[in-house]
Image (cartoon, rainbow, N blue to C red; front, side, top):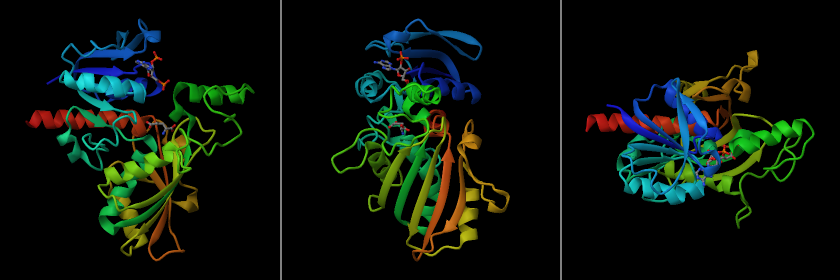
Length: 332
Ligand code: A2P
Ligand code: 11C
């Protein structure tokens, strides 16, 4: 069967990619609805060779029997409109942070916890980009060696901050001042993503900690994080240090990652092969390399993980959730 699908925030960085990924995957759409703010109403976007007009989102937008709505218009829009859509029988896949930690909302990465899709009550949350790429790699290792502690250090691209974040780097390279970031990002790095919280961590850091525990269904995991914005246009990179309960064999660990769904191992130091933003961009998989033992602890490993934050970190993950949902509905 085919579905009536809406994209909320269709004109944004992630919204546009959602359309592209829906198109690439030939998602079974009978009718498509595009929503954004009043600023973009009337704008035309092309999907599968056909032009669609962007409409201003309002409280009646979901009165048209929409099956699935992919939201990426920020947390306040999701906070208000996701319940309105769900109330009208639409299943919302929400890319914002608004609902992620709500215990009644599943937080899903299809390679990791697809089963959580089934208990949704109308809203399914898409995790933060930096969390998604981490858990795709960590899940098979947690299953096999039982993770005790994780240290995340991230190197995040400006596309994570949306259109204006991207523009700040373009402008900065021409010597112009930033509009989105508090300081220039060209030729600089900012140990600051999202707002600071009372414990001195940023919200981005707290998202990585809390979302990892929720997705892996393990509140006992000890996790710390430092998240950093770097002058890279697209694809987030992460250094992930992991300590396990059980001993492991390094080749066995590498093979476990080779077999993991959605993961590509790029690890051949002799040939300078390792994941990088420029090679991960445009791809839907998560890339891992620099796999080496942490010799300072009993059983630990260092990983270098890179993924396209707009694709796997946002749009692709949301579309994969929609695909799983459609599969489950077919079986019912
Ligand atoms: P618009 O283009 O009309 O501002 P990005 O993070 O890449 O800037 O994208 C944000 C997306 O969220 C855009 O599509 C933007 O639409 C949309 N958006 C922002 N505020 C609202 C709102 N109040 N209602 C609906 N869509 C919104
Ligand atoms: C960034 N991770 O790179 C952020 C963007 O919670 O969905 C995504 C914010 C979120 O700036």
